[in-house]
Image 1 (cartoon, rainbow, N blue to C red):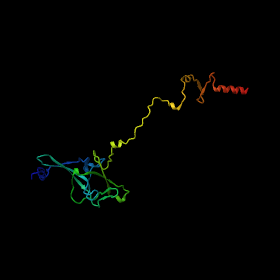
Image 2 (cartoon, rainbow, N blue to C red):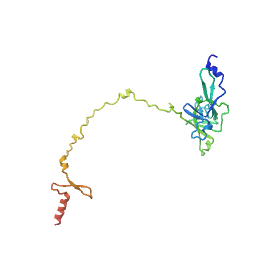
Image 3 (spheres, one colour):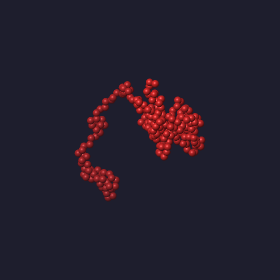
Length: 237
């Protein structure tokens, strides 16, 4: 065998392996089932997509162990992380897919009968399982699968990319209308009467405390109220 890489793989991994309780892959933070107990978040659920999306070849499970396997190599260090999972039954007995909404329900007490627990860590997605309320007697023992979003990554299928304006579109903008420059705050066309500041400074009067209104004084220094009082006195005489 001339390929050294295949030669190293044919010799098998080293007998001594490392076991982890936390591992980062594909933007997810995975925990084993035992390590997730008592924590606020459950990061032990995994999903492996099959050949047919939403079909019976999709697998859902829970991570039991994490093993780092190392191969002896003379050219480079070769390591791979495997998840030892407890898989749920992928058939219709243990997995139901809603054809209308695409939701997935898992029967928690049904397991995959064949012994195939290992999966490469970089081939799985993270999920968690939410049980139905006790009022749903028809869903007793079932949980709905919730898929989580990886950190630091954007799913292009869920993001709507806005199309920027192009030069051709901007060329059809209406012509700019020139506006006369504002040089004064007075409208000449309105024909308003200007007020002589000299007359304004000579204005005198007094305010009635009850009505809070100003009474104008005439040229002789008498107000309109004073004239009214004189008329009343003359009439009474």
